Every structure is written in structure tokens, then in C-alpha cells.
Image (cartoon, rainbow, N blue to C red; front, top):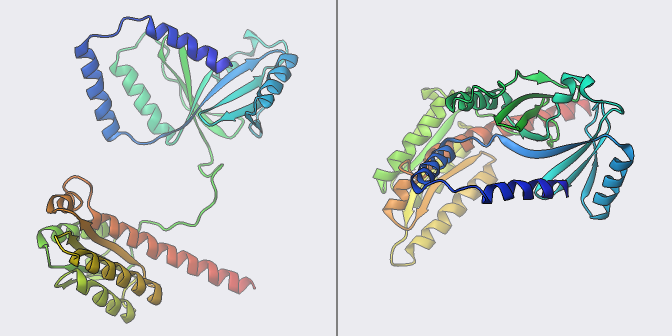
Length: 344
């Protein structure tokens, strides 16, 4: 209810304010589109925090939220002040129990728990963005962006005031793996790995772009040119046979398959695609050598060109990075199996 009341108040202020003129709205829309193009997904969640100075009121609020069915969770481990956290599908509310008799004498410690807290990734990068934006907008009369400070509950934070009366705390966990399931993942380092790229000559204007994308990904990731072999086959139909032969040789850590199939007026397209995908998958499963699938299946040449680096990324680049990661993952799995065997 607190969040609802705050939102209603803010909404009332917004709707009573005169809307900007059309040119300003267009300029803001263009700025938002540019931001979406270059933004990184650094915001993980927004939390609304309220301080409760009366224990009885805190208990009454907690009982109310529990009765309403809001998910109740313990407060942050190691936090110096008790409190409760209530999570809903669209947000989180935290009730922090203030120290009895606390007020202005608590000093700067009280200021570290701003009303609005935004959890982010790459806190240092976020601070640079916030500081640059406030400087760009020439908001010199507002408090400066604070330095990044460690907390007693295993996190780092800084505060900023992007608008008058609107202090915000940006924070992240000191342990980047906190709250995340531990997963075994491959690395994107191709150093010491051997790859073979099987590329079809048919529709070379497209497959050549895919090939360049794959080579770019491999070399950028540390692969040596002598560890990358390129094999050209007539068309997509011949890719599975060549890939299987290379995988059986045992000379390569991964096979990257590149080709393009364009839909025509007959069922030829479906027949070829089904057999190509089945053959590549079967080769991977039976040999145990990772096969990266970079065969495009498109309706038109324009769609294929878009996916070969023109507009929608380069699928050859993506296939190569997938191959690198899978080789790394296979090696890690092998190391784990050997270590478990030695312990047994």
C-alpha cells in the first residue's frame, strides 16, 4: 500500500503537469531509441525501502502483507538492522527496523539506506554513466555522486540525486555469484584449440560473409591461423559428409558448418534442410566432437544477407563462438570426471 500511495501521488503530479511540445517529445523519443541501441542490461531490480521506527507498527505491516499473500522472505544476512522483505512479481518492498530513538544522531550511516535502491551489474560503469549524465545536464546545484562504498551486508553502493528530492542508491553484491546457481560454463578463449570450417560454395556471396565472420571470431578469441582449416564443399547437402569425415579424423576439437538454403517453389528446400540438419546432428552425437550449426534457412536472399552481417548479426561469427565455448566446456567436463575418478 505504501508503494501504491507513492505511485498515485507521483501520477497525480505528472498528469497535472503541462505536456512538452511536439518537437521536444520527438527529440526525447529519438534519444530513447539511441539509448536502447547502445545500452547494456545493467539493471537487475528496483527495491522500495521504508524505515519503520515503531516495532508494533512494523509487526502490524508485516502481518498485513502476509495476509495479502505477498511472498515473505528473511532480510539480508549480516545486515546490522533487522527487517523484512516482501517480494511481488513486479517489485520488492523492504521494511527496515530503525534503531529505537534513532534520528539525526545516526549521521551518515542512515543516509546509506536510500528509499529507492537499484540493483545493478558493473557498479563502476553505472557510476560513470550517472556522473557523466548529471554533468551533461549541468545539474551542479544537486549533491554530487558519492564514491563507491562497501557495506556491512556484503555489497557495494553509491548514491546520486538525479532530481531534487529524488535520492537513489545504486548497488551490487560484492560476490558476483551471490544468489546465482553455480553452473559449469565454457570460456571464450580459443587458445590451443583446433577448428575445421566446412563452408558451402553455393550462394558464395552469402557463405563467404559467414566464413569471414567465423574467422573473425576465432582469431579474436586467440586461435592461431595454423590451427584453423577451411574446407569448401559444393553445397549444403555435402556438409554433413565432410563434417563427419573431419570429426572421425580426431584432428580437430570442433567443426563449424556454414551454408545457406533458400526456399523455392518446390519441396526441394524442406528435403535438403531436414537431411543436412539431421546429418550434422548425428555426426556430433556419434563422434562426440562439437559441431556448430551455421547453415542459414531463409525465405529470400535479402534475409540471408541480413543474417550474414548486414543487419541481423553474422551467424558465422555466432557459430564460431558457440564452437569455442563447447570445446572449453567439453574439456572442463573431462577434467571434472577425471578428478572425481581419482578421488574414488
